[in-house]
Length: 172
Image (cartoon, rainbow, N blue to C red):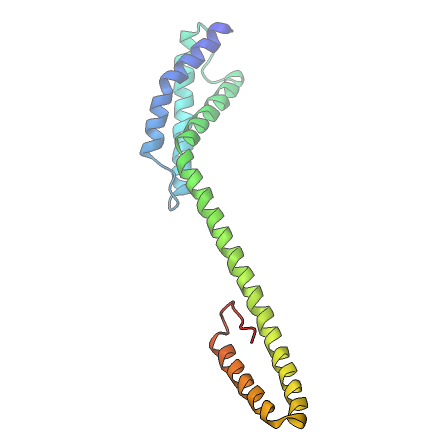
């Protein structure tokens, strides 16, 4: 058993540079993810068969290359191939994850901005109605002041229409 485990490990040590070479020659890219993964699965199966064919004679184990007991060995070998391919693509996977995080942050920011715009569009008519009510009360008391307030309301409307999509609201 120890000889078998040592042989399996030694053969994987020899195969690892080959797997890294294959993984770098066939990188998983966005446009051809399915095709590349299918190719890696096929190559993983071939590498697994080759690994088992080399390991069995070297470890003095007897038995057929195709059997129920060797199916578990094939699964482990394909899993080892998958881990090595994943390690070869860590940088690419990390950049995909970062891009998705940046896109998510950007969408959250746009959602916050849209919510703010919605609130501002709901608030601005109320401010205008309150200002007009205030103007109605002032007209009865001080017509000169009412004229200045009316000019301010016109200015407010002009600024509001010009800056309807800006996040800053003039307090005046």
